[in-house]
Length: 400
Image (cartoon, rainbow, N blue to C red):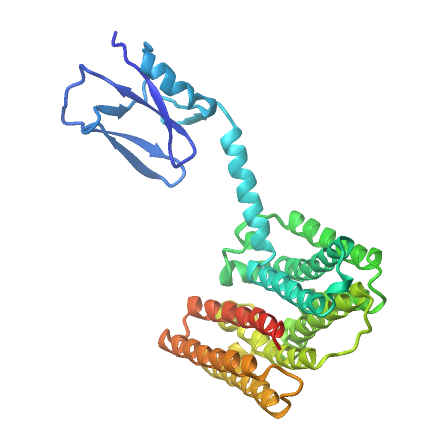
């Protein structure tokens, strides 16, 4: 009988393999021992050349020495063994539980649509910061809690509308966006409904208990309603390109107006539209059109298969992309023109420099899209770029 010292180490697969040094083991034709990786169905090979160690899949009688005892004890808390027939037997579930929690959290985060969630959180923070900077005497910690509640309300809008869309577009997303958590099966339809309903009710509750006035709850309910009209049968306004664009424009513009009124209400200020917010409102209103129609650039194949008529399926990706470029350039030119015509209302230097740079960036993105021949991946990146523009304009709003 051969005695050996055993130590274990955690692999990248989340399991622990036992390494057995053998002083009397001689090299033979089988210099590698293969273990089936049941996760990726690929063999994993471990060489003993450099360290005289190899992976053992057979039961061995082990004799501990001082080194292996101290070395292995630090790893045996999450021990797993490999059976002789290649099955992986987990003796501890801590690692698996942690992995499942992280995986579930990542799936829920992607359910929210991260690019939209990040944009909403940043935009809300920028608009609240703009009002606070001009009214520092009104600052208080209860006010910060109120602002956080308003931000969560806006986030609930996007979670609810995104959830409704992913539930009713399940078959389409399996073709167009198979990486979405509901389409990929990471989140069940039942859980998606639960998240959507909980967020919808929570957001409405927050709008009421924060005493934000009647207008903010109305805008919240209207945003959810338009999201429902867009995705849910029998309405399915997304099947008509004009009603689909209308729903998205109302959602994006209504969210910005809702945040502005929430800022004013939380500070106890009259809801007067400042020149800077009027300029932001114009920019967001015009930008929401390219965002609404560019979201379908990467979905042409799936939309055609399921009979969804969009501007992209009707006219093709290239003409729609050119319309998006033109509207964004018009947007930047109009904002710069306003800064030149009414310098008494705006910080003209900041507006001119920032928006000229953004116009050049739009041209660069148009060149990238043209060079890629409007492939699916580049169209998806272009759509995310539009959300970056959406957020950056709120950052510029701080200095207008």
